[in-house]
Length: 282
Image (tube, one colour):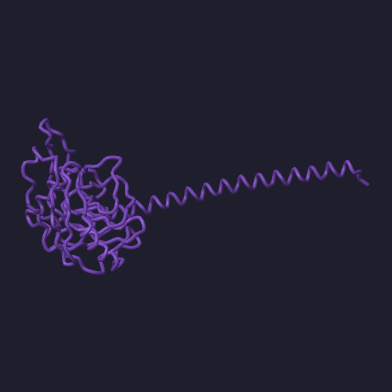
């Protein structure tokens, strides 16, 4: 028969083994949790990329995901803006050589070598759902502001539809600016993105879409009505005022048809939105 001392020793051994098993289980749980967190992070990043891809493009608005177009993205030929000694900037508006048949040739903005880089430009976006006043910021995005203003002066946006609306918790936008209404159209030129690592997309932002290829910004833009968590890849060209946001909220409340689900998200607005005129306010 074991003595009391032997029983205590055996009990201590059993306790030690239990503690070791518990420690091992705890290590496994932490390791498994780390794996789960990593997988979730990857999924979230992938989802964000998919959503962002839907903002991509004039000739390929989501690298072929957000629209039915499968046309190739333009080559990255548009050089970044260069600041001149007089404070203006030189913008490069490069020909879109992708072969996309949904492009509309309206020329290019005048005097690109002397583009204003100060002040703002008020623009009235009149739509079938109400007026959306916009303010373009030349200081923040001189090339985008010059292009937007030029296209408006050429009546490029007039009579076009806003082809995509997204209602996500951290991604709410109305996307417009495609003359074909398919998500694959644009002008016959592209230009470089004007972004910094600090670029963000809070409610009220106007930002330019692109195909995901550097130097592929053109005419498509998105109006942000929900603080949106996007990578700093899209040129912020200005802001929407409160009256315009009220119109966007009404459009958003009606939702969309989900035609871009599951990826990159959203669809055509359930309440059709047509830009009747885009006017630079003198």
